[in-house]
Length: 331
Image 1 (cartoon, one colour):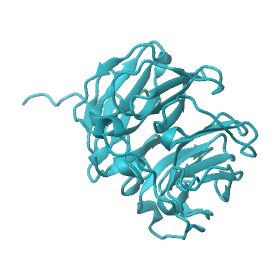
Image 2 (cartoon, rainbow, N blue to C red; image 1 turned 90 degrees about the horizontal axis):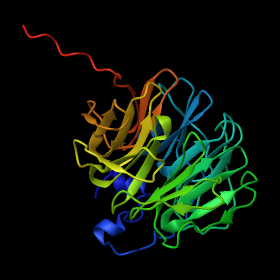
Image 3 (cartoon, helix red, strand yellow; image 1 turned 180 degrees about the horizontal axis):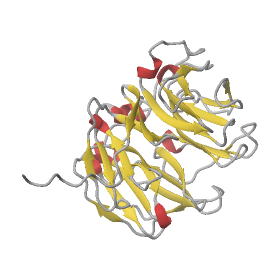
């Protein structure tokens, strides 16, 4: 597996051990670190996640790059960051309090909407690779990553407790929250866990297939989508108790998905392939915008555009219409 799979899983280790039977190996220790350098072309470098901080948009990626946009993704400026580690995830609990995570066990915190960042002490080693972060409010949040790494804080990162939601040390690729507050963990080797009590306990959910999962998208009316390798997409109408396979037009790795405000569902992944659903995930069409590249993150802007972050930085596109134009009448 090439390109975005290695990038989104922190570029340091093979993700799909169950599929590839690759030899398990830890990412090499890197002792050299320091403040991220200011780079004029940072917005065109590898970027791996996007988040909103009130009206502001924040992007994170390689070399410790954190970018801020105050005009809905039309222009970007680089924030000062105390690490050069690749950053893989970012989340804001509100317009001011945000978190970013990544390589070298890096957990960063901001209290001013991303203008300045501080590294948080957690006690984990520098070989740890963190892949996602989610905060329920300014104080309570979660960080997850490679080899089953799971950290929880209830005091805004002053202290962290390490949990073990499952006995196997499979990579946790994403932690997601539904509209009714249920939490899900998705990861390699068909890892799919659910928490109904704010992350204090986790239960295994019957997985839809024997392969890695990279994301979960909450839909309307409590429906769910999960997506993974080789174009695999599954849909649940009962909170994850059962799953139906969804046919997709290309067998591509699907890294992230989002449901737009108008109900359109977009999934994105390798080779610039984007999948679009106009019927709540029951079917998908291929969308391949000109110049598109591998995409790791999607975000809808306040003015209805779609931001894509990935191998070629961040790009702003007009989102596809919910109702496509009817075909032209025959002459």
